[in-house]
Image (tube, rainbow, N blue to C red):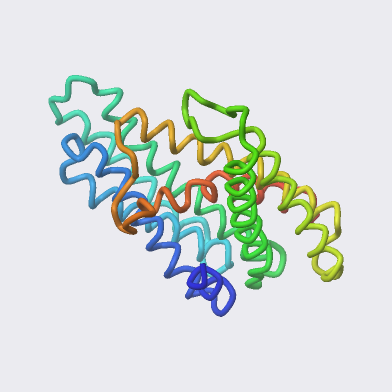
Length: 259
């Protein structure tokens, strides 16, 4: 938590370095779930995803034009063509395993670059990103504490047997109360209704993000996405909520707060 806050707050290149690595590790875990079919494309896919995040950073910051995305487009085409030369029993599944992690890990997280850079001035503005992470952490904590004490009604038992409606509501409630407090003390930063809406968005899509990752792990038959953090799973397990919240929060910020 401290590393994330420091990287986002202190310098844009600290933000870039940390989250480019996060994208790379997330792709390493995701492609590792099907390494037998990935072969040489695993390191290529990791490099491609990290390139997309880095390219998005420099484009959102106004350092380069859209041309920086051309190599990534060519990279995707080469990956697709490479599927022709593999004698895989299920070519559609093979292609999906190539491209879905690029969208899920690299594409969705890359939208965070358009949150930390103001689209008009191209100045680095870390506060919205920090607010989103704070809301995600509060929601996760509130949902966990409420769920273990009051949880009786299963939210989505087929995918995640431990999640409850009580935990879901408790997480949103705690995050919403915190959002009103933040708006009260920092009215020059964000209004109460925008802060509250972002809190609700976080509660809803953080839950969906966790459920989607749980579904993916259930499909491939693993408990954790990786073992990088013993006792806490992998990078995907730590960032599953953020992956889904970030793009939706970006849409709201861009459409309703900045305009």
